[in-house]
Image 1: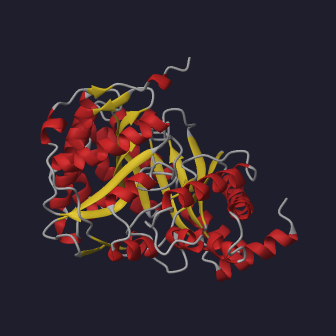
Image 2 (image 1 turned 30 degrees about the vertical axis):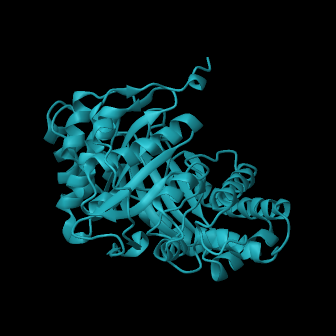
Image 3 (image 1 turned 180 degrees about the horizontal axis):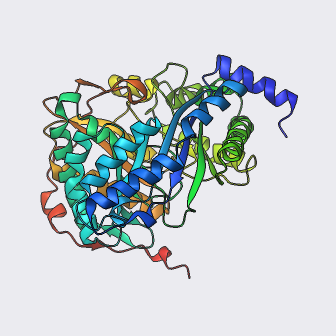
Length: 448
């Protein structure tokens, strides 16, 4: 039960502290839509999504209105398309985009391939089509898993993704490389992530499920204002208690959506996902702890504390906390990160260090347009190694800004925000990336 005191606290969080339910994401299993003929498969995919998600947006809007809780996005995630595409995947991509528009969601994720141990012919066809698909569609998001703790790193896929990202940036250069903002490369991707661009409905998921993503960096920041100059024990306890309250609201919304749609409740993903709004920044939580800017010495320690306390608080508030759950650090979507990067306090290398202890990885980072495919592949490989060795999810969502150099700005608008173009290490890694093959899994992967 949600008690009166919790309701009043929730109202204050919404009105004064930028609290929201970031997304209700409906996962839909498409394995029974597979057909040898591409257009027939696309038709079945379209019909199933339109039927299953027909009431999703309306239900979300009803809950938002009745409970007074902002629900920013309604989304869909589907089975990785490479698992159902027996031929050309492009017709399926177009059908997914049409279906997303028909049911009125903000994004649809799952134009994806799982290649951490190797690739199928379907995986290869999907990868080759990504630049075209992301330049032609509006709501479709794509992801590729290239590494896992159990399998190691597929360096062939890493090498190929550097080229794919460059091609996608070029095909969407008129929008500052917007296609790359809808493309993420994972290590240890999770099957129930409700957040874009990396959401997909994994093979272990049910026929369909409701997953809710909760966000409240502004709430955490305000809570920490009351414990200034207090020791870190107090800081951690304050974050933990705040995360508990936030997750309780997410649990309420998830169960209500599940009941009204008659679709099983999956998980609540408690991720402090920022927006470009000034009061909704993960970076400002770090500065509230005593750092002048995100990126100053001590930033990684502060982020580690934040991430851990968020998970501890969230896990006590719901029986089913999943997805990524922690703190996101997307540069273009966080006003504090933008300010830190613009001031030179936050570098690509410092962001990489921070990803060792946060939810995901190098996220929404713009780099000069002349950055080579090999350099991008090297950045992906470094992040994949962090994920593999630490048995955690890491990811890269990087945007080569065609025609722009370090210090320029790219503009995406909406939740995707804007970002300064960050410099990258210019030394060559071409011979390293050219090797291909697989980097073996670490010894601690052998747990059976």
